Length: 311
Image 1 (tube, rainbow, N blue to C red):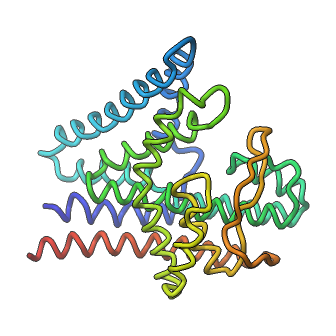
Image 2: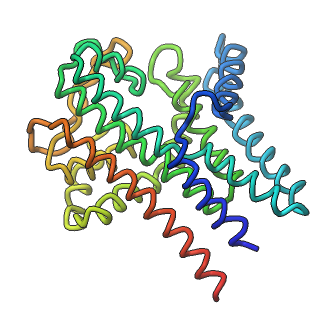
């Protein structure tokens, strides 16, 4: 029965993501997550004890999401087809490989029309200030985002699906959504969102490093592992630097450096040492890497569960 619970939904959700991505017309549970977070933040993020209020909100929503999906699956247990559909649909919602690639490619297409158009489209997918970025900085930001979110948006939810099923994947998505909404180090969220940000760091610790390793494997660049060890920690985030370092190693380029976030200059160290011009056609290579890493991990999870069934 395990292959029915894990392997079939995994493969079907992967195929659905390849085919559909994240269509805007389709109702998405992450939108509901965002509304719940926004409601809780408005009610709790005021007066005193902001760290503890943020912790309570984070734990309430994450535990609540896990319990909802856990008990929903318990109810569906007597109905195998309904269980399969439920797992497939919500795992499809949890992974975002196609939409990540689509958004990255869209920035490159807009950039061909002009730097202003490229900046505007980039602002859809990054938290930094894009108003003063030049063409090379825009391309760099796209590649950084595609590598970092390959971990956040694909490998991490697949990891927690492999361990805890759909409840685990959706718990992770709630934590990641909390981090993206309240995990900022600004005046409003520095205390209230700290617990959510730290929890996201903990949950992403292993997936981020797996992502970097998988990127080297699928590109036959495993000899670049020392590069990741050297530069992976050159980032404000304890995790984002690892997939970024992997892509910098593969492309033989340099990421990172100072950038403006919410009006403040953040002096980020560089990841890599080879400063070079990034070319338009390189987004195809980066997109292919994302596809290959996703396929590779889907195959790894499937083989692990198939092997366990045969033992």
